[in-house]
Each structure stands twice: as C-alpha cells, then as structure tokens.
Image (cartoon, rainbow, N blue to C red; front, side, top):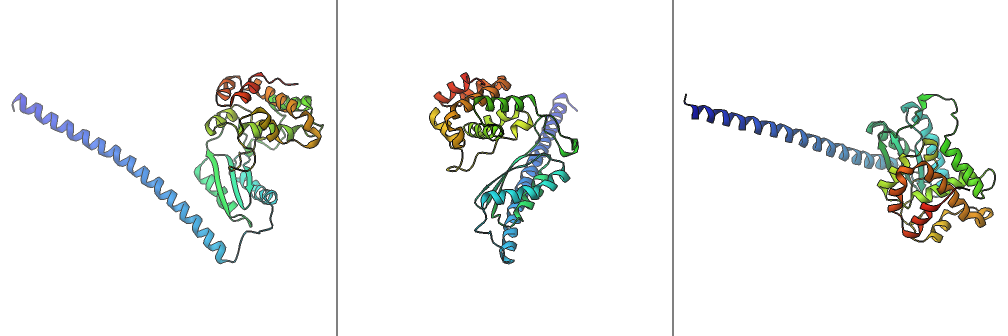
Length: 280
C-alpha cells in the first residue's frame, strides 16, 4: 500500500471515529433533555390528575380558611416529613389558597414528596415550589441531634441591635424578622440568595420569602418608604427608623464580603443607608 493511500485510510478512520464520538455526546445530551422534558410533563399531568381527583371526591378549598391558618396546617404536615427525609425546616407562605414552599432539600425526589404532601392538605388550591436542591453550608439536618444549640453570634448581635434600636422587650425577634424580610425583598433573586447564603442558618430562617407582586414587602425607591414598609407595631413606630438602622448595621458587619455587592443593587437612598447604618 502506498504512503498516500495509507494516510487516506487513516484520515477516513479518524473522521469516522470523530463523528461517532460527536453522535454519542449529542445523543447523551438529547437523552438527558428528553428525560427532563418527560419528568416535567409527568409532574404537570400528575398535578392535574390530583386536582381532578380532589374535585371528583367533592373536595374544594375552604373559602373561610385564613392564610395564617392554612400556613399552620402546612407546617404541621411538613414537620414529620422533614424529620423523616432529614431536611432542614421548610419555609411556608400562604396567599389565599395558594402555598409557596421555600428552602433547601437534598434531592428532586424529596422536593416532590413535600409538594405532594402539601397538595393533599384541605384548603390548598395550588402549590408553588421554590425548593432548591443542595443545602447551604451550615444548614442543620434533623439527624444532627435534638439538642438545642446556642444561637449564633450573628443572631445574638442582631437581636441585641433590635433591642438597642428601640424594640420592646420580647419583640426583638419579630422586629428583626420584619426588617430583614423587607430588606431581602429589595434584592434581585440571585443577589438575595448570595446574601442569605452568608448568614448562619438561625438568622437566615428569620427571613420570609418575598410575597407575590402586589402583596407584602413591596419594592421601594425612597428610604422613608422602605422604613414604612417594615411595618413595626404602633408601640415601636416612633423608634422604627432607629430599629431598622440598628438591625441592618449589625447584619452588615457579618457579611463584609457581600456588603458592596448588596449596595450595588439598591436604590441610592437605601444604598447610603445600608452603607452607613450602625447598630445601637
């Protein structure tokens, strides 16, 4: 065989192997896309079937149930499941008969189990899952033990800051929750997740998931509007700005690596307030 013919055979063979490899990679990608598509369709159809069974059995959302009561029902149902699945506490928000789940789980299957359990609760019309697969560093699983752990240094500092700013004794936690939840709602979703990721779990658990547009913690542009949106009780209203400043100042000290990124996405007045806030 001549040298040129030999090289030609080698070249054709290499091209054939390359094409086969590309087809294999492309095939795997296509298979994964198809599998995800089938799984999404199956979940959608499962939800429709569950709703059909619910209506066929004569069930319907209780028109008199309050969102707060419905949220309590959901939390009571999820408690034993969280322990069985060994996942951290799921945050629950109810808006009418719609329920939003927010938190971290280990697998997609665990998320589906939690969502399906909530769908079966009387009064629930629709479930929106914002459960993320993958846990934050420091998240505590139920299997870590039932003993009570001392509060983190960050939580202790924030509660002390709320008290120092003027929160009434015993209301420091609710004041801190109101301030942090309203502040977190001002951040874009990606930055909000990064911001919360840098907080210890016991402090992060105070932050409520932003409510649907038009309800709850609104996006604001002016500092005065933001302070008003925190919505502290009337007894603390005169000290509201001091409480807000004190809590945010304490939090900023625990997220120095994120402070600049957070400031970059805030409107001007709120940005300056965040950058200069100090705990009292």
